[in-house]
Structure formats: structure tokens, C-alpha cells
Length: 103
Image (cartoon, one colour):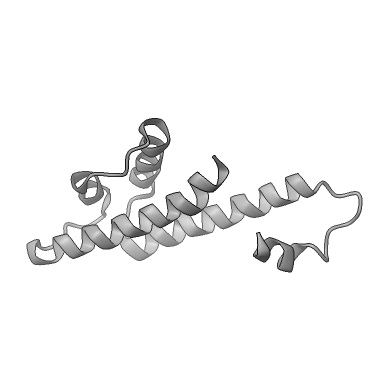
């Protein structure tokens, strides 16, 4: 919210709709975070989208197998636990920021 105010409040005109301006800003930030998560952790965008839909529908975080299946690579056995934990933390943070905040 503070970032929106800092970046946009001075550029808005009195006739602009604040709700739609914030919604557009939030959608852009959400897409940027989604793209960054996919790129940084090598997660397939379609798979992450499905994980997010499952969370919204069933209120359930992804299982370890779902995270591994969402990756665009197969982690080595010794790295698997760390990779899964890191990706799950980032997915959880994304959900807390962009899904739960709007509920």
C-alpha cells in the first residue's frame, strides 16, 4: 500500500478512480512477483498457477510432490529437501501477499 502511495499518488488526477488505479497497480505487482518466482526457482508458470488455484479452492498449501512436479528440472536427491523448502517458503510468501491480502 505504501509503495502504491509513494509511486502513484502524486500522478493521480482528481478525476481518476483510486480503486481501479490501485487494482491495476496490484495486478502489475502480482504478475511481476509471479514471473520472478517462476524465473528464480525454475517453476513452470502453468504448474504454479495450478498450485495457486488449489490453494484458493481447498485452502491447502502444495505438497512436496506437487512442488517437485512444478519444477522445470529434477533436483538431485541431496538437494531435494532444501529446494522444496525454499520453493515452498516463496510460494507461501506469495500467497500471503497476493492471495490472502485480498480475501
